[in-house]
Image (cartoon, rainbow, N blue to C red; front, side):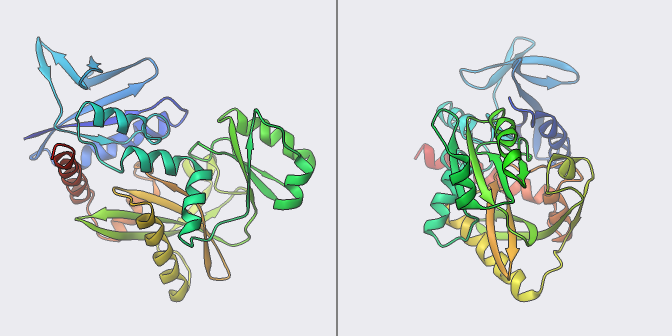
Length: 329
């Protein structure tokens, strides 16, 4: 029986969401195939949690000791949202200590977490996106020039952050500076993007049994100005699967989403956001560790697609173990 660590937590404000996601993933793993252990990666420490007891993780090899016996993991199921689990740090670490992990590798993780760089790469593959302007907190910038290029309204967002933390929809010049301060609290780099007036959709794409598969397209109807933290996690939105879009547009979204996934040489579970304007889906961002609480979008898509989470994580673990074989080849 494989010993599997279900790893959750993180160092950002997203850790709360990660801990919720952990429970659904933990319950989805077949107990006849896997010996499951919850592992927390938190600012206060790394530890395995078993029957309410905490056992510190030895960072030299990602193991723990219980009753004088050392326990190693055959595989990690990574469900950390935000840093250090979604930006490449943990993936690089696990490769160094030779522990296989689910999801994409450290480069794809770092690239997709950096919105500016991800958009720049996908642009080369013909993926449409909003007009954008990059700001570094330590370099000079001119608000009037930015507004002239991007227009109003626009979105000011941290370049590297998730769960819509630090994002503001800016409608006037007076709102710009406060929006920047809010975004800079999450990241030292900020992306300003033009407002796209269209239908927002969230698209689940995975590598399942070796093939790229679009799991579902969900229409997002936010009760707020945009799909912010409250809309995502506190019920201030409607999430309609499948999206209420015509068949031609649906196929276009599927084609663009699959092309973006493959262009980045992705593996594992992903959820990408798009705004559809005049039948064209414009890329916003890609999440490589989307939420997995019962109310999260991806589990809803999987349920409607008749894709059992147990089978999905079997596939994920198999891919992880095969990748380890390539490391050691």
